[in-house]
Image (tube, rainbow, N blue to C red; front, top):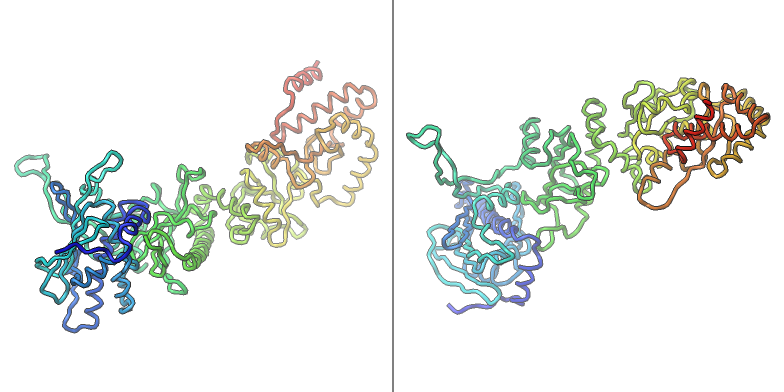
Amino acid sequence: MAKMQFKAESKRLLEMMINSIYTQREIFLRELISNSSDAIDKIYYKALTDENLVFNKDDYFIKLSVDKENRTLSISDTGIGMTKEDLENNLGIIANSGSFAFKNENEAKDGHNIIGQFGVGFYSAFMVADTVTVISRALGSAEAYKWESTGADGYTIDVTEKENVGTEIILTIKQNTEDDQYDEYLEEYRLKSIIKKYSDFIRYPIKMEVTSHRPKEGSEGEFEEFREEQTVNSMVPIWRKNKSELTNEDYENFYMEKRYGFDKPVSHIHIKADGAVVYNAILFIPERTPFDYYTKEYEKGLELYSNGVLIMDKCADLLPDYFSFVKGMVDSEDLSLNISREMLQHDRQLKLIAKNIQSKIKSQLQALLKDDREKYEQFYESFGRQLKFGVYNDYGMNKEVLQDLLMFTSSKERKLVTLDEYVSRMPEDQKYIYYATGESVDRLEKLPQTEMVLDKGYEILYFTDDIDEFAIKMILNYKEKEFKSVSSGDLGIESEDDKQEDKEAESTNKDLFEAMNSLLSGKVKTVKASKRLKTHPVCLSAEGEVSIEMEKVLNAMPSGQEVKADKVLEINVNHDVFKSLKEAFENDKDKLGLYTSLLYNQALLIEGLPIEDPVEFTNNICKVMA
């Protein structure tokens, strides 16, 4: 039969489809298997309205066959088949989808949804094949036809013979080139891996002859290879089963099978949504951070399926950054896919799903916090930092979502507490939520600045993560209680008598503090009598928005700009050291300079800040000891 030309703008359009639409060659197998699944679905639909047609699911399957010698890969199905007209219309006109037309004529019932929409998936075969042959016999027809093409130059259709109803697609695989290895599409292991990746949950069996091993007769301990036909796909996805049918072990096995992680998930969420958008999802909260989690290489996202067919490995739009640790999958029939079925055409459905998923994750974490504190703290140790980043990012836009999930170490119990737990046990007279920032709990417990707050019987939250204080600055207040650093200028707990004493101390020692301030010019904003120190002689506090801990964090970043907090050197006027200061001020200005430098460097060490001149510091200590 004479060669017929494609009815679209043949060569250019076909080349575009082969070379531009699909990002990975392996997609061809997903597309051809999906087409075969559609063909079986069509028989199912016909059986719903044709009493003479009985649909027995066991009779329907998809089969792959490989002939390495002749370099052919065959994909056959027991579906509805195609007439000569179907072959001309569906394969002769690029982007004319027979499945799409059929779908419009027959509404989906009983969960059987035809995947094909655009009619271009078939042509992905030309990415790996020199010649594509289609042999098909339609349901109700005694004749079979063979469609064959070597690409954009056209196709032929001839009468042929085929014993059973259905379609067989035979790909003559291209020869290897220097840059491309096409042999892999003739290898059993590679074909199996592609099926498992994209088509594992096609609802019909995908059969294939595979190599297995069995004990060799008459030879103990030896095994022999043999070939047998096996079903290589799972068919029924776990997410379509009822939750009551599944155990925790089933979910954990799924987590391991999908290689979401090498740990065990702390918790799982199984969603069956039937609202504005219909979808199924299984989400996992991991136990441990992946090795690359806090690197640029880490990719967030959930697997995205459309009717059981994998569309995207990692759909980032389904998860907000602050829940990027969540693993799992989403399967929906309502997605508007683009022409290659690799991306979404519109994001309205996706936004609805993402919003619902965000809510479900938060609810699950709150339930875990309430019902299984130990597991939540285990999770928080791995991913609490990410939640705090989520509060800080986007100018605190997500603080309402996340603030109830945050935990910090408490000075009272030396264990993690929530903000709600802290506020719920605040004494009536306590105005603020107090916190201290530093490198470790051990170090914070020894801070001079904590003395007055602890003496009042108030609890302090210990911030040991460099993001903690930045996140809290975004929250501003929790349940109408403001956050206040124990190193802030005004703690808000001084009595009127204390304030009066401070004023008197400031007035009495004004000249001394001015002299010390002059000696420390450019290093501190001012020197003053301390309101907070009880047993320690000296400490640093900060005025303004930038705390001393923030200064350390920001200056450790590779921005090149130095940031400085407005430091205040506070002196305990009731300490013995202060008597020495006064005496030096009155009798020995050189000694005052020595004491001032020592006290300033002592305050720096307490804060974990570097001493500007360690040699001078050690020499000064020697002078005092001499």
